Every structure is written in structure tokens, then in C-alpha cells.
Amino acid sequence: MNIQWYPGHMTKTRRQMENDVKLVDLVAEVVDARIPISSRNPDIDTMVGERPRLIIFNRVDQADPTMTAQWLAWFKKKGYGVLETDAKSGKGVNQFSAAAKNVLKDKLVAWKSKGQVGRPIRAMVVGVPNVGKSTFINKVARRKSAKASDRPGVTRGKQWVSVDSGLELLDTPGILWPKFEDETIGLHLAFTGAVKDEVTDIEGLACALLELLGNRYPRALKERYKVAEIDGLQGWELLEQCARKRGMLISGGGVDTERMAKVLLDEFRGCKLGRFTLEAPEEI
Picture 1: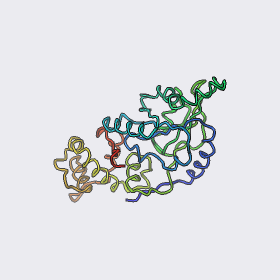
Picture 2: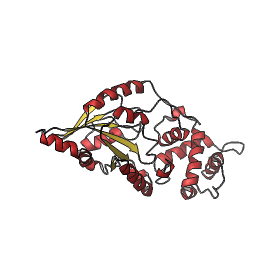
Picture 3: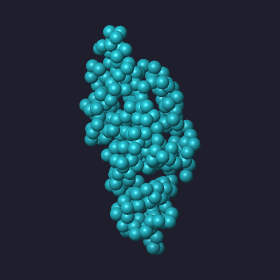
């Protein structure tokens, strides 16, 4: 299933971000801790250039904690600053200012030597749609200053948010890239809701997710959907079994796999199945 979604406004957004990055000292990139590589737009590396980076692992409450620890170590080894957050509950967001200053410690020393002690840090917050950027900013600023939603594509224009006298944030719209070269990346983004469901085949998406979870977290599927056997089954077979166990029957003895697909995706995104990470550092 080749998933592509690149609304026209994203081209304009990219051009705006390329100009705005010249105004900031730091780029804070929000990623989904469940898919820390798939939720990184490779074009952002080009746009940001040599600007210092802070990778914000959002939704850590929904990710596998063992895998999150591995990913944090992986990014630190690459030279990035890292921060774990759950923007919805506010966990970790209070450490953002300290994390930003740590990434910029050399620059802050240079500013002090030039007498620029009161200069605020200006940070651009970037990321693909629906990773929680606006919710993160609202929590950091302790007020609803940036639009937030559980659906992709809500933030459209440039928004400066003053956190305190020492920190200003630039919120940006979520931006995907024109073509996903790797089919897996498109699937991972669709699983987590970064790509609108309307442009996907919901049943095909659910089948792919079931196969992935069956390989990585079979116990969770067995416990949630009471599926007895998983090994060797195709995604559509698992989808049918789950639908039968949930009593989603239709006339003629068939099962309502479309309804089950929607339930599966809702329960995965709502963390009702468990805490999952769909990627591992050794796979990169």
C-alpha cells in the first residue's frame, strides 16, 4: 500500500520555514516516540542546516519504554540534544528550557562575553503533522496560544509564542515531504494518524498494523482481542479473527472488517492496546 499525502499548503510552508530558520538559535524537532525515524521529515535537515537541534520525544507514555531508552541513546550518539515528553499530560515539558540551554551552552557563553546577557533564546518548533507540536507549545507556555488538535494539518500560519523573558518559540505547521520513498514510512505515519485516514485504505492499513504488532507484540493482540493463534497468519486473517471475537458479524455469516479496522486504529492510537514502538535503532 503506497501512501502519499502532500497538501498544497505544505509547499508554501516549506518556503516560509526556510526563511524563518534564519531568525532562530535552535530548532526543536518534535517526533512521535512510537516511530522516531518515520516521524522525522528528511527535508528538515536540509532546511535547518547547521542550526543546533533538540529532538523532543513526544508521546513517550504511548511508546515502549525499553525501546525509548534505546532511541534516546541512539540520538545522543548522533550529537543531538534529547528530551522526553508527554505533551498532553505535561510530563517533561518543564525541562524544555533547561534542555534548550544545554544544547546552546557554548553560544550562551559567547553571548555573555559580548554583553548579550538578556538576549532570549529563539527556538523554532518543527515536525510532521499530528505529533503534538502545538500541544507541546501550549504546555511550555502554560496557556492556549497555539492551535491544537488530534488531526493533522491544523496549524497553518507562523506563530511566535513568548514563554518567558528568556525563551521565545516559533510554532510552524506540520510538514510532510512530497514522496515517501519507503513504503514502511508511509504506513507508520498512517498508523499514528499523521496522514489523514481519508487518503488510505482503512482495511489494508489495519491488516498491515496487525501483521506488525503480531510480529513485535503478539501478546498484546492475544490479550486485547482474544486471538488464540497469530504465528503465520496474514493481516486479513487476523482482522477477520478480531472482528469475530468482537461480534462484528454481518448477514450471510461474514464479518464487518471495515468496522473492525476502524476500531483497531482507534484503540492503537488511544493506547488501549498497550505501549508500542514500531521501529528499532538496529533496523536503520
